[in-house]
Image (cartoon, rainbow, N blue to C red):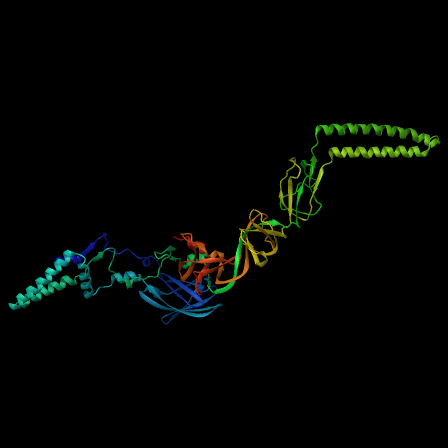
Length: 550
């Protein structure tokens, strides 16, 4: 009886619950996955409706415009295309229990294919495994195995077995077989009675093989083994894309930091020579981004004049006015005399020339006082920077305007090593916007500037949104070669420990992190030299979003 009581509840070292916690398999809707070399298919069952997600196996892009027929037993059902890019079929057979064998007949532009799969209906496999009856022989073995962990139960079992042996011999000698049979029957009932909860040291006794290992559910989450489960609807939202890894031999590359500069032959600055107060021309001051032509008036600068200079000019102007008045009076007297022949005509000509010279000297003095300095555009281009407003007082050589040609820009790169510029090939650059730019090598400095070798590259086709002074990353190939897998830079992200990792698409809705070692290749791509194998499906778009799932 003690042995039977111990078999009812035998739990210790940790206080285990009698009912195992529900697994992830029982949390989501029933689903199936199947794939081929062309397609990957995930189907989720909700009542009598089966929603089908069909993607290309290579890049995980949704397949639209396909014609899908599903064979269920002897019945063929055509799937209807939904507005969200999925396909839906309905059948009362999905209301049953057990499992159904399905065959998906796919006709699409990428090719025709047949995908067989099995759909489990009702409760999950792990729940069914717990509810299945355990044979009495297994119960005996479990009871004996757990009895060895408890000295009290072991002692009780030993005493019971010894008593049975002694009683058997004693009663057999007295020919009391009915009593012996009753004792054996009670023993078998006690041993074969099902234990309600056998648990110790963190273990339960559900058959491990009955638990479904593939994760299911409708929520993205990180699994205990480090992989991440992302259901297909979430993959569509995150726009996850993959490529199949293929090793290739390519040249090694060097990465340089740089910034965008203007082409010295297609740019210019506008400065004041004398300084003074800025005033707007007739058409107003130019605005940023305005296109101007060579010779256009940009601004006027009224020169600043000291009081002493103003006094001197005023005195000089007064003297000139006086001389002009005397010359006009002299010319006025000589003209009547010249008409009567008293005075020669040459005196009239000399007096008139003297008067015209005085007029010109007066105009020069007036211009000195009031004529502003005219600032004109030195080249054709657009206003890249403007630092003036009307009424502003500027000093000599202040930078007032910068004119650039957005179709002709350069990049200044900085090399802190011993790179040979003559051996660089296929230089490219990428800025903060992610746009790649092809470059042409222009030259490099023969002297170090702050321990840096400066290289100049011309941008072949500058993007519209590029800006002068914008930092960029320059990548150029060298003559040495290496072998690896070339992927987009977005495919490599940082793990929790700071190491470079990629995400492998190992199952239809499961992703695995993989540490890698990379080398630069060009402005948009890197080369994985360790950590990736041929045939791996590597996430190249949305890897950073997957990396943030917890």
